[in-house]
Amino acid sequence: MDVVELARLQFAATALYHFLFVPLTLGLSILLGIMETVYVMTGRTIWRDMVKFWGMLFGINFAMGVATGITMEFQFGTNWAYYSHFVGDIFGVPLAIEGLMAFFLEATLIGLFFFGWTRLSKVKHLAVTWGLALGSNLSALWILVANGWMQHPTGARFNVDTMRMELTDFMALLFNEVAQAKFVHTVSAGYVTGSVFVLAISALYLLGGRHQALAKRSMTVAASFGLASALSVVVLGDESGYTSGENQKMKLAAIEAMWETKPAPASLTLFGIPNLTTRSTDYAVEVPWVLGLIATRSADKPVLGIDDLLAQARDRIVNGLVAYRAIEAYRADRGRADLRQVIEDNAGDLGHALLLKKLRPDIENATDAEIAAAAELTIPDVPVLFWAFRLMIACGFWFILLFAVAFWLASRQRLEAYRSFLWVAVATLPLPWLAAELGWIVAEYGRQPWAVEGLLPTFLAVSDTGTGNLIASLAGFVLFYSALLVADLYLMTKYVRMGPDAVLGHPVAPPFQRDPIVQPAE
Image (cartoon, rainbow, N blue to C red):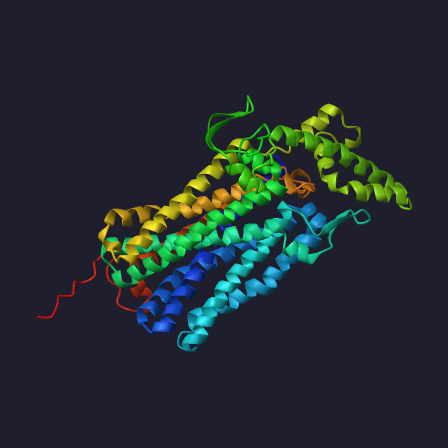
């Protein structure tokens, strides 16, 4: 593996590992706010006990998320130095705001959450809990604003004098349609993760006949909030599909394994087997109209396939070469206003011309065959995106069904009566994390070959370093993160086995010992 592949592997490994903790933090923070609100309104201590118990698990997860997230920001400077140089003026803005606004808010309030029960009034502690939830969501917002700009760069321009991208419109960066769609979709997925977590652990307690009062109430809250969140994920995922249809057409075509343009109204491929040899999808099962409605919000617009998008990429490469040649000439004579105007007119396609750097250094002399080969680089890995997307969608609809059944049983106060459902809830526990990881694979792997869509190819964004450094640091990350994973699983399992008694300071019953049966008075 070369430097580019090793740098990508390292960042992908750390990002996917870090995102094991983010969704649960988002989901549990809101659930804690809901539970404590009920406690303040009713005064019933069972709800306070619920907040303290689930809050302990939240704290363990939060600490792991912080420890694994900090290292990612350093990787921009170590492994992706040219990326940091080229777009640092834009990308660094939301990251700085996230650290100053959201991270410090979370770090301050989490201490008050744990140590403020006897020092703050009920209402003040409730405000702390909701402030903690707000900080968690604001962290996600600013991170996704930065990531959304990488998917759809807007509010910035290329400065030929500095050879860098510069921020021109902060509001365009903040209200980038891709970033906003990613934010609401991602936090909703986090809410689903938190709800499934609470639902599964509570189901485990009911199966063991332990902590039944706490478990039933927790399951009721998780079922209600989870159902709303799971439905939101589907609706907001549709919005992400529309923004991809507008701004990342190649990613959408790859997700559908769609080589030829589909006439309106375009159908969605429900199932099939992508065939890269014939550039087709074997055994395709299609749903009429759906893709057209998602991608174009209409029934009369076609959805472009990979072949037509390749033709557009070739045109953009040729146009970008005009800007590249003008830049080379402008460096020799910076007084020529005509060259500057040519650069400004064609700078939007300069990134496509830079794809030729993977094939030859003197790209101004590229042949038609090399231009065609460079255009082929714009196709991401079709089978990976095709299957990752469909597995993610299958998980999403499963969550809706699971929460709908849980909500129905909770409304009838029959949760403990259906043990088969409780076992299904427990078995579902890993699926939200699987769906979240698949979602990031679709988003980030589907953006390739771009570090910044249409502007900076990934292979040009890396640092000038040796493979030895990357292999050593990757091995270090694997060892460090594996140790953190063992610690996290140990702590989470320990407190789940001991149950709320360990958190509340009560005598801890042996694991799996059932609650005593209270006999009615004679």
